[in-house]
Length: 494
Ligand SMILES: *Cc1c(COP(=O)(O)O)cnc(C)c1O
Image 1 (cartoon, rainbow, N blue to C red):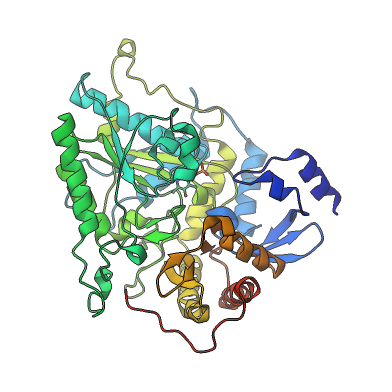
Image 2: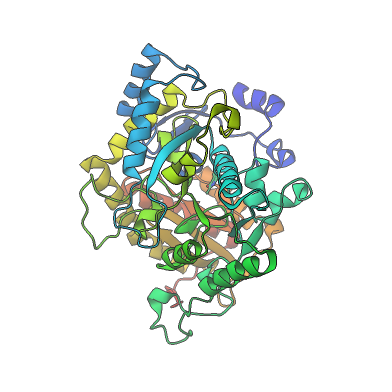
């Protein structure tokens, strides 16, 4: 066993990991990377199938990102944002506000565009900031008798700090701290593959075997909003949503039009809209293939696809291109203004972290944003999106593949015990974990979400590398479940 692996086993406690299982085998110790490839301490090569848990954008060890980071390092690594401004943080804030403006106007939004950037360190902290801002804003605008309450989606994941846990609705990630976190409400999220109404997806409304979608999941949100108003005499403070696709819930896309409809309901009820684009931001949700954008205009955020302008926008993961922990919570001018006052009114937002607006992170993020605006990056993203769309149908030959979901550069493959009934595997069988382990042995690294295999490669991944990932996934399934059926199963209309 490699010396580094021994040290890890001896001293490191890993996140979201059953350490008893971890301690049973030699861990993969990553020592270097280039583009979509990673190398371990033994020199074995891997493809980074999930962009290092959804953070990396342009590839590892990127020439321009390295150079930007080193340029900043030669000036200064960090000075405090408490009482001091700094160069890359100011430049990045301007660039983020500009990049997040709506591409088409949002007719339902009266709060104005995003105007201010509050920095923090991780997705979770970006959500904490949004929560605290929304809470105080609501108290200040509705008066001291207001009881701000939050609504988020079934299966929502917004991070692991306690405020973020309160917003989350994945039982496994919440139940141990249920008594510790504040109460939030939850409402049905669209999950077309397991639609309780057994409807066709709205975009496949012609599918004869299924009844036409009537947006029952939107009605559920409307009913929830009304009930809150009726029962508690005031609307929610904010609706928190992962727009376009819910990540940790299992890569579950919302049907086209859902976000816009829900945003209108939220607006009509005078509620803040908090968009958690920690996973979806920075081009991850891809480009509408039929529309042609220049690199400068292409949408980079999920909300922009549906012309929805949130009041608070949370960014992290891809913000630095996957280099450094940095997060941002963007807010409207209206929210910012609610915190203005004479000093002795103490309307100050009393929140901050030691490394808030860290220069190394901000400088790298700024360069990453510039890269996203290059033609080369736009072409790479289009090529990757197309390569995924072309390669994925081969997976339908695997009997355990129940659903294949692609949103731009994000893919979730849901494994099921029986595809005819959609019966899921019991989590204790570790179907997803076993498949990912078999993939790792074949040189592709990713991490499952329960029974969903995630493919979310860096934007520089070539079509050949995509085909390799799909091939490896197929071989891994054969290893775990036995040989695939020969006849090609057709994707059922849903
Ligand atoms: C990962 C994630 C978070 C939490 O971000 P961390 O950086 O891990 O704290 C929050 N929201 C979404 C949608 C995420 O995918």
